[in-house]
Length: 69
Image (cartoon, rainbow, N blue to C red; front, side, top):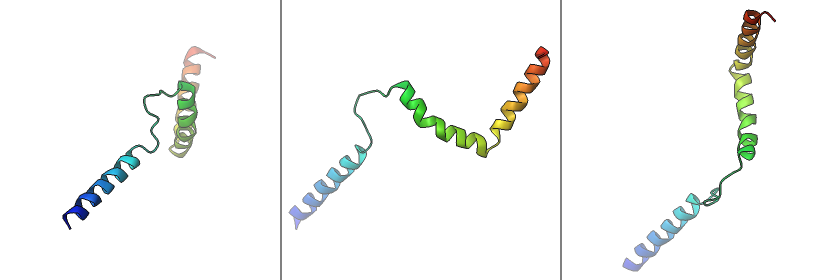
C-alpha cells in the first residue's frame, strides 16, 4: 500500500507539470505585432461594450473645436 501512495503522488505531480506547461512557449518572445493582433479584437469589443468609442469621439471633437478646426 505504501508504494501505491507514492506512485499516485508522482502521477499527480506529473499531471500538474504537464498542465502548467500548456500554452507556454519556453523562453521565446512573441513579436509585438503578433501580441497586438491578439489583444486588439478584445480591446475593440470592450471599448464598444462600455461606450469608450463615444468618449473618444467627444474628446476628439472638443480638442478639434479648441484648435479651431
